[in-house]
Length: 88
Image 1 (cartoon, rainbow, N blue to C red):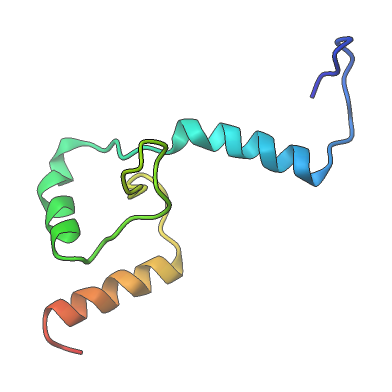
Image 2 (cartoon, rainbow, N blue to C red):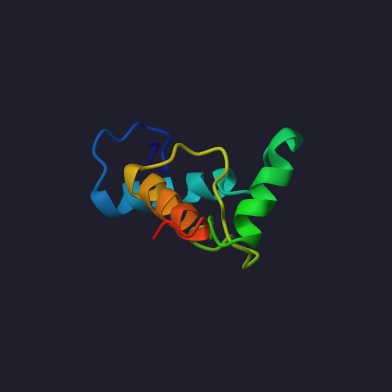
């Protein structure tokens, strides 16, 4: 990180890092994805299998299609799918 005089600053506090990371993530938060999976993604949304994460700046749900899925997210999706099939 550069100071106003152009010199480098080696130390960064947690608040500064968090703010910089938050600003960087804004550019990554979108629902862009290739067309080949559109029908399956729409089915999952329409049937409540996938509900999305924190809202995008425009207020729409952020499905994070290109992000890696966490274990918790996978378990939630599998549980909802099992409910849809009447297994639970």
